[in-house]
Image 1 (cartoon, rainbow, N blue to C red):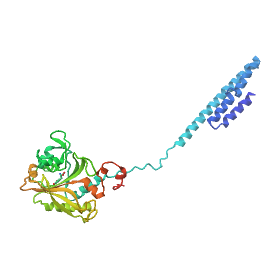
Image 2: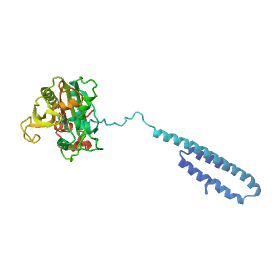
Image 3: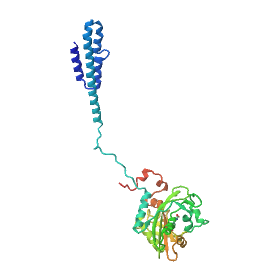
Length: 343
Ligand code: DAH
C-alpha cells in the first residue's frame, strides 16, 4: 500500500512544473490533511507488531518525500533564477540616448564675430581685469579724481582704490604700459564685462559687455579709424552700411566722435528702430588723448593712436532685432535656441 503511494508521490513530483504546483503536492502529502499525515493518524488503531513495521515504513516514506520535494524545489528555483536573468538581459545594440549639443549665446556669437574680424586685420585679443584700480579706470585715462565725467560712470567700489571697471578703456593703458619697448606699435581689441550703477531697463543693465579697440603707431589719424570702422560695419551689418561721425566728448580722446551706422532695418529711410533718423549710434571713439599716451609711457610727439569702445549687447540687439536687453540675461531656452545651432 505504501509502495503504491510512494509511486503516486514520485509521479506527482515529476509532473510539477513550477514552485506553486510543488507547494500543492507538499500540502497533498505532508500537509495537515495530506496522504502521509492521514496514515500517521491510523497508527493508534494498529497492533504493537504492525506499529513497528508500518511505523518504520511510513517514517521512511515521509523522509523520502521530503527529500524529493526538496530536490525538486532546488531545481525549480534554479530554473526560475535563470529565466529571470534571461528576461532582464540588456540589449547592448539598442540605440543610446541623444545628447543635445550646446549653443552659442548670442553675445558669444557677436563677440566671436568681432574677434574674427579684428584678428583678420592683425589685432591681438587682450584681456583686462574686471576688478580694476581707480588709477587705470579713471586717472590714467585723463579723468582725475574731481573730474565731472566720473559721474556718468558711477560704479561698485570695493574700497577707495578698487572698483568693478566701468568700461574696457583701462585695457588701453595696461596694454601700452605692458610693452617694455615703448616703440612697439599696438593693435588690440579687448572684449569683456563692465559694470555701472544703472537702473536695469529695456536698454540698460548694471552689467554689460564692451569691446575696446586701440591702435598706436606713428602717423595714425582719424582717417584710419574711419576706414577701420567702415570695414567693420560692413562685415557686421552688410555691404551697404555707411558710417557717420558726430563730434562728441570723452576725456581720453581728442578729438572725440560718436559713430552712427545707417539703420540696417530701413536702410537709412527712417523707421521705429532708428527713431526715423535713418542712423543708429553704435560706439564712441576718437584719437587717443596725448595725456593717455604719455601716462602709459609712450612719447606723444612721435606716437598717435585711435581708440573705440563698442557695446556688444547693442550690436547683438541690432543684428538680431532683439527689443529688450534683458532677454540676453534671462536664460530662456525658447529665446536662446533661436540662435545658430551648432549641430
Ligand atoms: N569708454 C567709453 C564708455 O564706456 C567708450 C569709449 C569712447 C571708448 C571713446 C573709447 C573711446 O576707446 O575712444 O562710454
